[in-house]
Image (cartoon, rainbow, N blue to C red; front, side, top):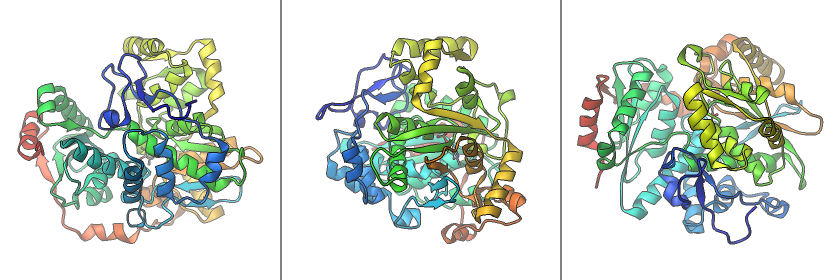
Length: 478
Ligand SMILES: *Cc1c(COP(=O)(O)O)cnc(C)c1O
């Protein structure tokens, strides 16, 4: 708990980096010691504070939550940035995050009304505004380099398009994204957005990003950065919708709700963990995985086992097809009572030598005190869940949300509303949804129009040197 007026500092999960302020880590990924940044203490959300937040707009609530974690951006600037990020223009209605109560104990929290129809917009839209603000304050520029197989890249591009001081170079495997994803990304004609279609597969794109970022001199000269899922500000932006969900589903202080979260890299549900640590009355945080069940296995057994590529499956909820969970170290940091040496032992020594670790018995006991539960679902479960949700409630859900819905049903408890986080709109996975229900989800008007728009993409060989040359000519380094 933080005493009033103690400024928030950020520390590395591996204990080997100096404590720094929010603005110093805003544009960063990993801490210099290879760890992830976490607030040195969690600000405390008192019942009185929570009650005083009822009735705030989403942008106002975001301002209030962010204000507890940021002491080096003036409050009125935070308010302006949140107001510019969470608009009815970007999210289709002034509500920003609506709910659907299924009436059987489950409530869907709709996080995918942003420009790319997936929950990543919730964080990315704010991140774009924060990045532009901070770069301007520092009088510098940033060139974002990324690889995408579809979803993360488009969320980043829609967040950064047209922003001062930011240029985006996004590599994608040529011809391997869905037509919907291509229409979404390639129709962006903003001069600061460069879609590079690489002659190769997604892994080739990722290898090129690693090669380019690994050239430290090039990286520094060209001011190369990323927007990956370990960025702290992204996680912080996600804390807001847990508070929003609690406020919407409760009437009195101290009432509990539970959340089920379709999970991959553990970023989304880690934000729920942060909210719970702040004192938000969350009973259960249920981690739902698909066949790639690294996280479910951990919560069942206390063993974290990274998968090889032959054990990483392509599923119909592809955004959860992960072999390891890049934000998981943040949770373990709390489990080991913030002992950086122990985190290093687990994530450097043990992960490095045998691709996994098992917690000690006292650590396993401690895991149970954080409210987590878990479950997994498979392709058949997704189809059945999508069909049943449509037939019983008239609600279409996408394949990822279906993983959440399926697992949530095993964790319902009398008197505790279960909020299932919707992470994408069904239209993004229209084929599977149609297969399950016989109904093809309709794209929102703004997205339907994309199909006819001109597209711009630059074909590239899978060659890091040629791509460096392209970046050199177009990067903003002013
Ligand atoms: C990214 C993503 C997820 C997984 O979220 P994590 O923060 O990586 O756990 C789930 N569903 C969809 C649709 C996503 O795009």
